View 1 (cartoon, chains in turn orange, purple):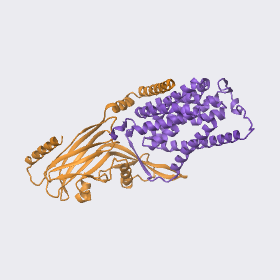
View 2 (spheres, chains in turn yellow, orange):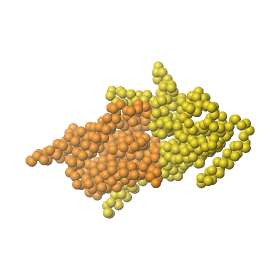
View 3 (cartoon, chains in turn orange, green):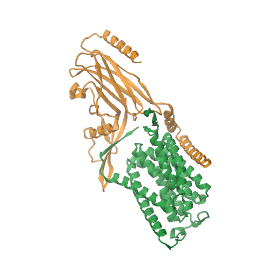
View 4 (cartoon, helix red, strand yellow):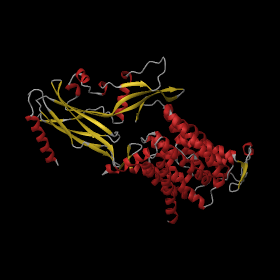
Length: 256
Length: 308
């Protein structure tokens, strides 16, 4: 396995080198050890390897952003009303990447300036997230992303979907890079973008994007589709199964 | 190896350890057999605590209670402890109530207040019921310890029993208005849908104190009614919200049906007032825990829900 992977890496590197016209522009090719992942019954998160080759120089950095699939998120704020903590405000974040992970060879503030990162749309602060009140109230100021993004980041970090730690990327001989990517058990199914960028002196000089596909598979997909496509039948089946199980248990215990 | 013990729940969309699910089912199943309650009032908060979305916990628990109630009711039927006529009236009310309850649930969920309503209902109902039961069982235990304690009447009649539509319930030795069990059934049905419970912890005391049914038939009859009400909730939630997780329910009920059998046997070893006293303490414990959660300042004032 490992030998085959090394061979492929070398091959990719060769391709990259020979195709290189401008010596300074840099070139980068990245791939994943598996790009199709099935959420089956045994799914408990997964590890995969991101690897690739780059035409690098001493001091270059590699930065990886994994993000996807967009979803709306309801954010609720609690306040004390008559002694009880209840949700008093609900805002909806629109089309937010449900997973957002950054991996890099160095701390990202050492790789590029905040302005550069913002212009490259790296980091959840910089992807132009929009928020709106669930039910707008006349006279009440509209919520702004600035006001609520910190709380969103903290909540999403606590459920492992927006890790607040930058993961590690190893760059060897300024040519080969690899990173272990851990995907949490609660990721959504859908298409993920994997962006890999090469930085030199604080400037991004090359970029590659690949996709990662996560889908429900096996029994778990079967149950999910059954529940959504034939919901009445699913309900009846669930009831019959429960009745049968209860009956069987009672019968089994009576005999013993 | 350990990782293979995890199972991905397709509707809840989370991964959980199989041992935790089956163990939870077994433990709660034992209590349900012991006290003749569905156990939902323990299971639903525990599932939510373990990270199952509240809506999925409530709907899935209804499905699981169907199984543990079937298993429990068969044991009681063999001993002739089910009043089918009374159960039928309760169940008619229950089907009406639980249908209204699922509608209310859907509405509150859209309002973003379902969590609060679930927790408040728990605190209020568990608090009242637990306190009353504890008081009653302590009083009974004190009375029986005192020599020459007076015998209580079979049951006390009150004005509610005199409402129209009087019916004879032979097994319960009662001649009372059918409107009363109908109303109790409907009320418990609403709670079943909103709280993800069978409602036994409300119905059992209501049958004893409001209807005046003999304790021996109360548990079997309440289980009989619970089967149909929770089946109705399972069906309606499947159709309206698709929140019944069959995989989770299956594993829970695997543990629960076994636990319930042991519980039913253990219940023969304890006296009625001791059982009620224990149940009361447990009900109060859950109530206090949930009550604190509502009153104490949460660590994080913000929470998120991924909408799909």
